Length: 164
Image (tube, rainbow, N blue to C red):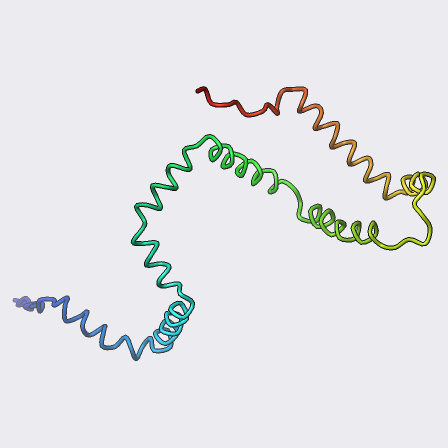
């Protein structure tokens, strides 16, 4: 009859395994270790390590101040406004913002450029009748109508003063 093969597993020495891994690490990760030393040195040169040490040592005071400031009605309104603007800004295509913000320097340059003739009402009316001016005017009127509708529906009430 077959005889079972005895299996004897040597006890695992976790400390010895860690020591062996640590001894192999400089050879296996030399480039990463050098990059980490260079980063650490640059952080030291820029004073970031001292700043981080200061933040860590004053963490209780910093957290207490932040918590006290965050509990004010102004801070709560600011946070709510930021969340609202995040939602609004994410709903607008970047090309629209690009068109608006690229036109600002161009418009300022045109407004401040020296003119050969003085600005006249008739000249302004002629410029207002161009396709581009009419498009911008229509967009401004659309915005104003929407804003007025929101004001009328009570969507923009001034903040209440806290009771004394």
